[in-house]
Length: 210
Ligand code: B12
Image 1: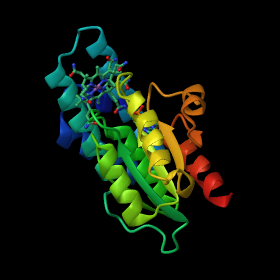
Image 2: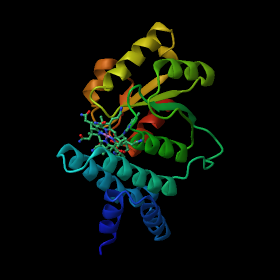
Image 3: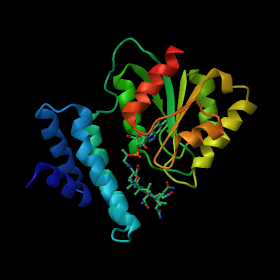
Image 4: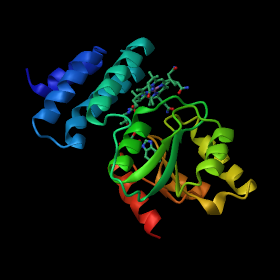
């Protein structure tokens, strides 16, 4: 069987230990972390498409996402020490009402791998928690993920809240997530948008250089 077909099957079957083992094989074959992750991303997107078509039910989507996360943890082990010199600090999270974390975690892993200190607040993060952490950590960047058309508005609400609290000029705000666009980022007054984790790093580097 084609190795990518094995990965596709492991993710679609929700086979977390199989997905983790296949991720390890790709790293051992000398692929870069992003190359290693590619077929897993294609598989989880296929699971989403099948869910939308009614061909997959929520428990299957959940199991597929657990398999995807198991692979992500092999490829980007959480808490692994990054470079010693920090390029800047990022507070990141998925906005309130939204529990999608895979894309945000990938953005956090790549930022960390490129020398940023990342405080990952997880998913379904309230505006109060973001504000509390911005005051506590004083980050250079705030990275906000939203995967649902119904939760994108939370990015705008948080930006408004930052302005009200007098914090807007203290932090650059990056937004992302599947339904988010450059236009949306402009409309809500964010400092930038990136469509994927690699471009999120480029953008973060540009913003901290400014
Ligand atoms: C996995 C998944 C889940 C998992 C999430 C597990 C987890 N803890 O993360 C589970 C099963 C829990 C789930 C639940 C739901 N889901 Co869901 N899910 C998905 C799925 C299949 C994949 C998302 C994913 O991980 N993609 C892979 C990653 C790598 O890509 P990504 O997230 O887009 O991230 C990349 C970029 O967007 C960007 N990025 C992401 N964040 C950020 C942040 C910044 C700052 C930047 C710069 C860039 C950036 O970089 C990332 C890496 O390259 C998508 C389908 C899809 N095609 O996206 C549906 C999808 C997002 N889900 C959907 C829905 C409807 C739901 C539910 C409402 C279903 C339900 N009826 O309950 C619930 C929502 C629960 C909630 N309140 O949040 C819909 C959303 C439709 C819409 N228009 O709003 C989708 C599109 C599926 C579909 N086709 O119908 N889901």
